[in-house]
Image (cartoon, rainbow, N blue to C red; front, top):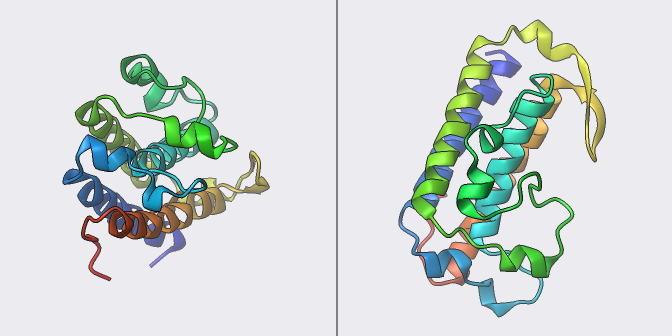
Length: 177
């Protein structure tokens, strides 16, 4: 198995976990502040942040400034959310205030991001991923690392966070770890 095949498999696994983790949540659960703690993020923010990050990295960064699914689909306007932000650098108060007003529309967006990522990885020559790029705020790295670190590894970290938050708000975890 190549590094790209491994990352592809892990991204597919991650996408399935995220889809399952959001499927049974009510809008109230998505926006509940876990344990009412002043420094925790809601599930809505975590899902939005990760999907926006993957969309930005795969489309804009790895594909030479290609328009994101977010921009192409007009999701910022449709969902009433920031047009460019992905949550990095947001204050906790801003993150806790984020609302997914139309969960079905947001899930449509994530499905398009997952499909776009899958298409990119399936069609990319592994040698092309050796090119060095800049991922802000992380710095310069080969494209393969950007895909593995900011998508697969970062996403799995948030998947674990989602499992914990589900527990804290009284919803059963779904990953079955």
